[in-house]
Amino acid sequence: MSDVLFGYAAALTPINLVAAIISVAIGITIGALPGLSAAMGVALLIPITFGMDPSTGLITLAGVYCGAIFGGSISAILIRTPGTPAAAATAIDGYELTKQGKAGTALGTAITASFIGGILSAIPLYLFAPRLAKLALLFGPAEYFWLSIFGLTIIAGASTKSIVKGLISGALGLMLSTVGMDPMLGNARFTFGVPALLSGIPFTAALIGLFSMSQVLMLAEKKIKEAGNMVDFDNKVLLSKEQILEILPTSLRSTVIGSIIGILPGAGASIAAFLGYNEAKRFSKKKELFGHGSIEGIAGAEAANNAVTGGSLIPTFTLGIPGESVTAVLLGGLMIQGLQPGPDLFTVHGKITYTFFAGFVIVNIFMLILGLFGSKLFAKVSRVSDSYLIPLIFALSVIGSYAINNQMADVWVMFVFGIIGYF
Image (cartoon, rainbow, N blue to C red; front, side, top):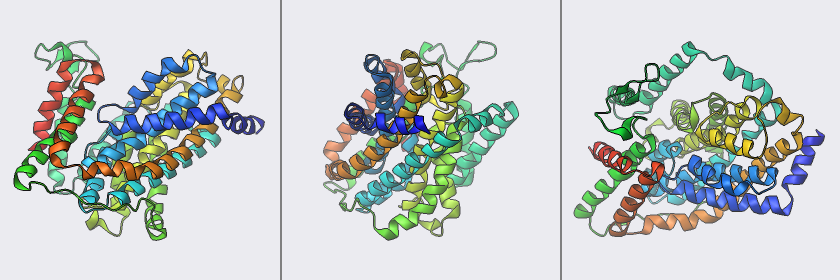
């Protein structure tokens, strides 16, 4: 208990508060830009944190992490371009609300659910970290196989038009995942002599193509048919009491889902978001709104993907096993500070660890404040005419795809998947 109290006292010092608020703002900005993922943001800031106090450096990385996961929902809602892969599920209903002139409501739902998921995921982080981390070690090949099958059923369930098409899409995704080096034999599979494909099809570039470049083509078509038409929106970012009560059960349920998914190595925020969305639809009394502008759908996805942040830190800190890609990068940040993941983090370096945990809570609070304060400014993106929006999204898509690995092959992959997404 003394380390916990010390952690909050240290996290509330001016330097750590400044680091928290600045890093959250940077994280939200990175997350809102297509292609600039949370992992990339954390990786870029690791060299900067090297000269900082370990607690301040880790809080800075946590701020970028949490801010970027929420930030991805901003562009997903306003322009149907997920800033991060974790926000792909948010775009389903978020953009529909924007087209109905309810961008403020969608953003308010996203930040509220993100805050609930993020802040409550600190509970297992504090209370059950060593015990829950052991659960992940119990998963063997058989369990991960059935988890993958379960993921495919989620894809089918989330398909609003056709379950068959959902299953076909999942099967196509499995086929595309075989591109690259055979992990067992080391042979190249379906690369057709292209060196850039040896590591597989770049996931983020493909996602930008499916959700961003396809949207550019759709907006261009709309521009021809509906010249000068702009989407109106409301500025009611703060949700009403009734709206909060409507999304609260979904947010709490998705928080549990996201925390559990976060503990499982390799699962990640994207799976948690779609699982949270699927469960929100299953329990909802307004199933007909899903895919047409449901705040429960947004809440389910956002609470789940933000709850992953706390859950994924559990195996990272206790066993040195990253829960997802961002915590794998964060693991490097720990080691740069001379901190070895494991039991020593809670004994020898307990004060640093609990200062980070307290900072994790604080950055989620700042995320809520900045999200509510800045959402009205971010919502102005939807006022931009299509003639300006099309080249902007196009440029961000190209730059974001190239920035992943600094190679043009990713840009071509993005274009290919953009055409696939359009049709």
